[in-house]
Length: 335
Image (tube, rainbow, N blue to C red; front, side, top):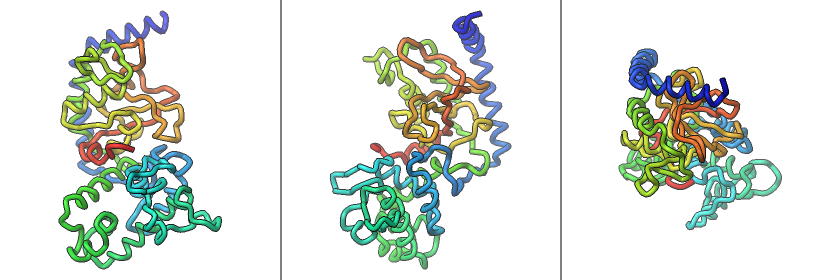
């Protein structure tokens, strides 16, 4: 039997059992819920490949500079600010991977690599400076009650005086949203220490994707009428989760940061699974699908193919994300 014929047979067999797959999804989630008992949690160590390899050791080292921060939190801030782009520059003149404005850099920039200069464009200076600045802010508000990390983030956004004045995160919607966004985003950069909570929306997302089986692939496709209802890989996953009220970013490498990362043996139906030619860098991810169980995903693979079931255990398998509503909302609109 040729490989092509084998896949056709496998596809027909799986497609004929869609109802069984959905029952399996429900069963898996009931079991997973009992095992998890509502206990998720983050960790101080970084999730595999979540930070580009060029900066991972810096983030891991300086993210432990003081108790108020962690490598995952520092990574979330850098991703939010620049998408790990060391040449990023904003309209407000914020510069580099940590997006320091010149006045703040002049006061808080440090020579992180000890080469005798402070260069805002050099991640070896900018990343240590971001961690140092966070810890300075934490020290300013250390006598304020409540969560030290949330108070530090609030001070970063609204100033230490506001945190001291209100005895914690001030009642400003922008500041509260910033604290919530960075806290949620940090979970997508942390290596989980236990089982990741199952997603309540996953079954409906799978059901949507199953209805699209056999639809021809379209590069850049998001399923619009003008596109004939066709999708590319991230367009399909975005549309599937949008049906359950979760707005994912448009491209696959940003979708990776929409929640925590279960290990391969902890995958559940509905998890997004990602593929890359560089297994050390989530920014290099080039493909995504929706896991359905049994080592298979539904994906829109490439031009000339149709939406179908494909195996996930390939050499370019990068990892997985369990999409959460908070995680998706925390993602920056542009990186």
